[in-house]
Image (cartoon, rainbow, N blue to C red; front, side, top):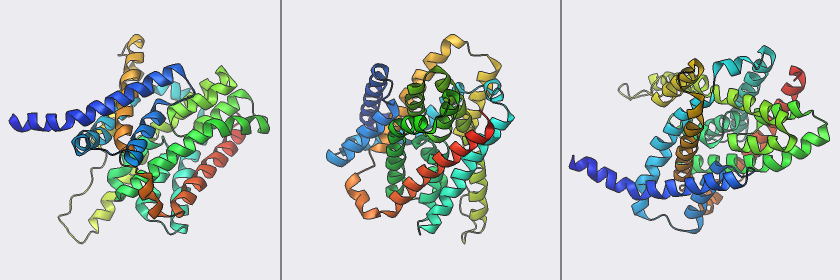
Length: 334
């Protein structure tokens, strides 16, 4: 009992800071739709790590937020998804989304190899850019065998590119002459964070926003099978490890199983629709807390030592997902 209390006391200061920042991000988003609460959370963490000093007393709680709290948020993210809504997307559009995710995931890893970067960084960026940004990076991190700097760089780049997309994609959509539903589908298929998707798509009206959200949530749903594939590959690599007693990663992490369970519960309609906004608020705050914890490891001054190749990978992956998404939207006849 005393050990449990000691762990709680160590975690309280960092968790309190993370919750406070998440609440700030939530209310900023309520006032300014264009500002994602998750971007605010990551930005606060990065600024604190880079220009301030994260005191030792806060680190245990921030670490817990970056892992356990963030994964709890991912579980609640499943309540946004209904299999019926995903079915409304139609087979051609669904295939287009799967193609975009697969092309971005494997294309980013190929580009990482061409740039001479490690498997860990390539896997982190591939998952972040193809699915849902920093949350997906956190989900795949246990399988990536990446350094702390690589995780930090991935989060910083995916956040930067997603934020830039809020400004860049509406301009490009107008220049390309995309209809509102086509523009929304393009945004949903190419932008990483859900909040960033909403901010970018809402510039072209309600039709664009509706299309963007359903496409984006379909990408989020693909997180589970993608992680299952990564886990299988990791287990196979561990079987060839020189240490036969080495611990193999689980076939599917518990939080992804719970995520799928949340999708099923939402689909059955057991949870009243009046409770869904409360669940969404809790999800936003938990993900925000986790992203504060992740951002607190991103000291931009240290990232200079990583070099320019990861930056080239991040920008290349951003261009890849944007182009592949645009082609898929055009061919699917949205």
